[in-house]
Length: 219
Image (cartoon, rainbow, N blue to C red; front, side, top):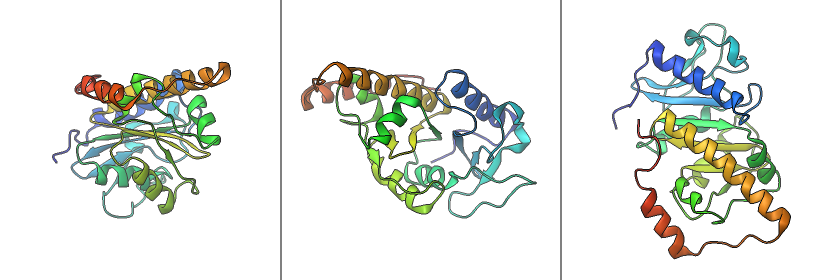
């Protein structure tokens, strides 16, 4: 599929702006998140360990979709480039990946809990639940495999003892999904604190999935 984005200064700045937005909205903290978009050359991804406020477009790294990245200048690609690469390769209809450590998503992930159909917004993530990817050390091939496996037929997953990842047809759609995922996780945790959440049945979620086709930011 043709890449939605081109490797130009505006695209690189959009990645930086996305990182700043994640931190400003409390969805991420420090430099623990990372963002990538598909381009004709492969993907553009945030560099490792650079504060978002200090990041400039020339620091954004280019990574192939089928090989190991080569450092550009003194910087390296995000340590999580492997699962960004693997998700974009596995999901040709998606053009952006956003990973972060939202507090409520991470709390569920630390308890190794997925999000069941407690709200119709589960449908925004492509299926009947938000799955949990198994634990593996950050940055490794095992984690990449776990994330891709968990996200078969899904647009998001929690990551055991780690955080959350979403994909999007566009960067705006991915950011929207990450915000909605953290809201969903927060609501689920609150409902657990006051009782046993009532789950929607399969028919109700199928209805929501149909209604969600084309919902959310489109470009």
